[in-house]
Amino acid sequence: MNLEKMTAIEISNAIKNKEISVCDVVNNTIQNIEKNEEKFNCYVSIDKEDALKQAQLIQERIDNGELNDSPLAGIPIAVKDNICTKDRLTSCSSKMLSNFKPTYNATVVERIKNAGMVIIGKANMDEFAMGSTTETSHYGITKNPWNLNRVPGGSSGGSAAAVASNEAVISLGSDTGGSIRQPSSFCGVTGLKPTYGSVSRYGLVAFASSLDQIGPIGRDAMDCAALFSIISGKDEKDATSMDFEKFSYDEIKNSGLKGVKIGVPKSYFGEGLSESVKEKIYEAIEKYKELGAEIEEFDLDIVKYAVPTYYIIACAEACSNLSRYDGIKYGFSAPSKNLIETFVKSRSEGFGLEVKRRIMLGNFVLSSGYYDAYYNKALKAKKLIQDAFFKAFEKYDFIIGPVAPDVAPEIGANLSDPLKMYMADIYTVMINIAGVPALSIPCGFDKNNMPVGLQLIGKPFGEKTILSAAYEYQQNTDFHKQSSPLV
Ligand code: GLN
Image (cartoon, rainbow, N blue to C red; front, side, top):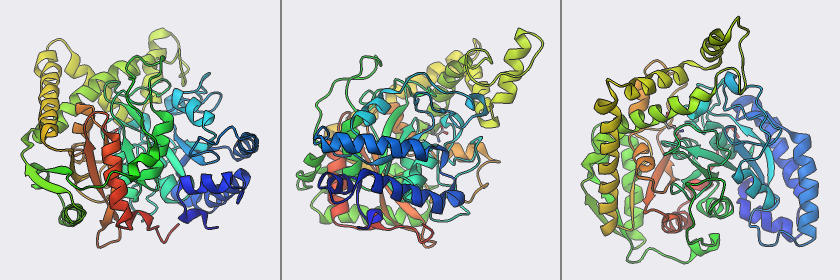
């Protein structure tokens, strides 16, 4: 049985049919970690012994027939290191939380445990999820499984690279402005940023609370649908989580694309988009036409406000959320002579450069003299962006376009120029501002064999529509089945 070529659902079925045991599957993932982790550095922490213990207990539950309804029972999963795991390091890849072991599990962690999934380790990320390359981690950079000189994307770079390198069968990431979709695109895997409110944020260390969502990264759309069905749904511990009509992952099989209307924003294809990405996106659009969908271009000029709006709102919320790290309540505390010095030294030494930049930006846009000029204006732009999407969705079932303007950059290429890095978030940040779901699926490779991702953007709670459309595409292409020669 070649587990690397199977989806998580297929592996779980093989376990239920007694063709393989949970321990065998976990051992296989551990072998892949032993082979690849030194090269890629996908994880902040790995607990092999604990994973094997979990595997035994889950095997018993499977043998007792308790997990027949769980599509991912027995599957090894990597969890991004900003998602709380009880008694287990949850560092957010920051020195600030390098000794933080939460006393409770995030709701998503409770749910994956109930579903019989095996947590293998905590995935590396940009510090506090701020970044697009996983280079700001306190635990070293993660490398792209397709090319060791390139970044895996970010901030969920470890989660995406773990799936691409078979160091996990599936993973959880978080997405505030693209952090699930962009690394999925750079690493050639499938990633879903769910509708705001569909997945509980309880136990997700907050970056920008009005934008953050946890979501799945997997080998294909069906695996993402299965994990989404496990983690989503109302949670009384998160007041922003919502009840919505849930669907079973295998329902995405039956939809087809006949009569489906897809909108393509013209403004997505202007200056800044690389030729190779453009070409692959156009090919994907052609494929959708061939499969029976109706494609129409439309204006979404509001895209020009996306990046500034996002960075003002995200930084404003981040500086408030991160004020809790004062050297007393959580994590790192610098030796100091008095209280003020404790605050100042702990924050100065505990946070990295990018996090500090955002705290300063956030405090600036919220300060009394600038609040109206920046923060208030950004809230107005947010409303315009939401309206533009809702208007488009009156006409289209979903929208497609690129995930990122280019393939994964070389390591170091972006760090010196943060503005350039922020601009590359142009296609992803609007989705979080609008609160809608979006998916990244592999749609080809550039001339250097680097993966390119296609973004499918859905209506609020329209996960089923975009996952079905992705499923249909993946039934008719095999980009998602390619694996890197380095793995
Ligand atoms: N790249 C974006 C940022 O740096 C998105 C981060 C995210 O989604 N967590 O803020």
